Length: 344
Image 1 (tube, rainbow, N blue to C red):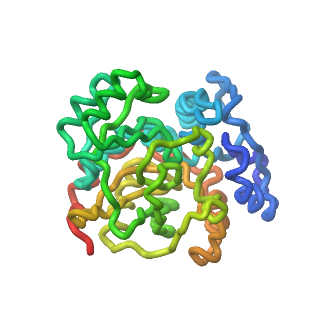
Image 2: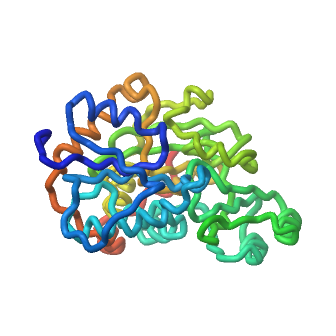
């Protein structure tokens, strides 16, 4: 497979996050080309791609770096590649769920999985209406966020109303947002489960400080101070002083995560959940088709996930794309039981 006449295309936007991937491809002598997702063009009339395989590494936080146009462009490019028969890792179905938190919550519901109580809005004027039906504190989350960006916490309805009146709530680049109950995570950490080829790869506990949303992954409190914080991800965790710890989730959680990635056609990605400190409920809250493996992975999880990722890429060269539309969540869940309501 390494002798394929066409290179692998690595479609990406962030300048730093994928250096370990490029290093592994170089180590194996695999031909690849870097594709700039922020300044891209394609010909929709072409019938054959110049690439043997395209790896979609577009980031939902790209708008924080002035590259928001790449988010919407990627949806069309992924659909085009699928139409002409080019295998794309994390294709149109994965892109659609990655860039839409409202879709994510609907999927969780269809699979019988719990998530924080939420409403979806398309105008800031509806934030108070949603907030009055929730238990405070609440958060407003933009539909297309990434790296903890675009999350604002409110502790009172008066604070919500004042922010709306002052025009301080920005619903993001697609003007859609979640109004959601803030949940204190049991143990002071959230959980991120990484998957590859539809199967569990590894999992981590990521310990939060309670002082910022500027983590990837993270669900903690305060307003992000600087948009540039969206550049941070787990590849920079040690540098930022973020504590991560490898662990193995309960079997029912792994089974639920694998159902999620099957339904969303995610080849490689991370699912995030927390345990509600009040109830012990397992609450899923985010689906990440852009999965940045943890820094110092060999020491943290015991192996190099990039090596396994490139192993997988080699098997996918020349293979057909899976069906681009997500599988029926109802069909997937019909033979499965929901995750147990409480894990202690």
